[in-house]
Length: 320
Ligand code: FO1
Image (cartoon, rainbow, N blue to C red; front, side):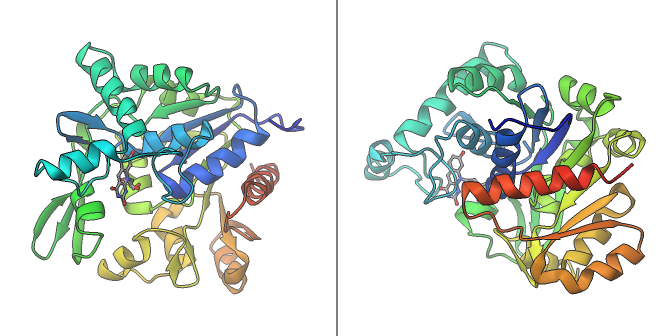
């Protein structure tokens, strides 16, 4: 961690690959007592009897600096012997489980079978990986994203990995969301009067951020918080930084633009961070009452991640 001038206490809402880059930047600027990352768990699924939490994995591996930089998900120095053998035996290999990564899924599943909650299992795994910043699953309850397509309903990983996001979507359903209770520490951090910023990562609004903010009670706690709510646009120009967000917007008849993302989050936002390529949209967004930060938002290097984190933290100091 860099020596830091910030008095911030920050809550960061994150999906997987895109969100983890900003979370890493924030973790380099803020101490473990200043930053908690709340992670989407609606992508979770059971595969070969194992509980897989893809976004939690990505956050743990990224903050543990063990992530596979080529793939964007999974562990570095990975080998695939188990998957090869699985294929030889005629097992399904569309979801690639690496040899090293398997240890996480095995242990998490064992912890859950022993009666631990997902958050407790995550704390144990983080501790073993030497991660000092808090990574919180959004809930210990079961919420699952179902993608409605023209040809039927798909579980999220089936849609995302098996079908490579190709089916045209007609809607997204968050199964179980109405009964989900936000993870205890998440709710506590959100209600903390000393919270100084709530930062929504440049993650997919529909399948990564919605599961967090659509849990009962979260929206009103966000609105009541003293902390400014700042989102980073996952859309630059007419495309998504990563993943299917732009394709989903087109199929859901939402214009693909950073402005449409701000509109989607609506009154939740106090501030919005857009890429310099979208500078021309700033005026209109400001006219709608938002504070707008225009900066480079692509995070190729660790320096990009730290710089964006610092810019957002400085921006948050200008609000509320
Ligand atoms: N993403 C893929 O595109 N293909 C995979 O085979 C794959 C395997 C995988 C295994 C463990 C894990 O934690 C994540 C994995 N992911 C894979 C990433 C993940 O499914 C997606 O990036 C997220 O669900 C979207 O946020």
